[in-house]
Image (tube, one colour):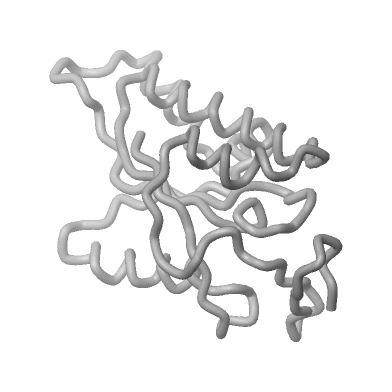
Length: 166
């Protein structure tokens, strides 16, 4: 089955189309600029891609402006050759305040809004998940997400996903 860009894609048993991945299998540490070069620049007609990237950049800037740091894993159709992805799948690992002083109540409320799943989807186009595992749970939670993000919908074909540092 052709995906419209001249490369093979597959339709899964669930009837959804697996578009070819933009990254080889594994975790790839990228900057926001490198992500743009990979997932946006090669698709000049992809207005949805541009919009999603701009919203992601706005979201990350908002999180950073609150002095919150963490690791963000990104995936989904945004990291495939799908011309117009619906959203960007992302998992934020262990966000923490980067400053020693306690955050204000206003900062806590803004962060809570940024991390709210329905808000992240509606405003920023993110299929957002927050991970705050205890140290004895980290291995299992990471393994779970590597399984989800590291394979196509067919659950057989390995693919890559991206990591951004906030």
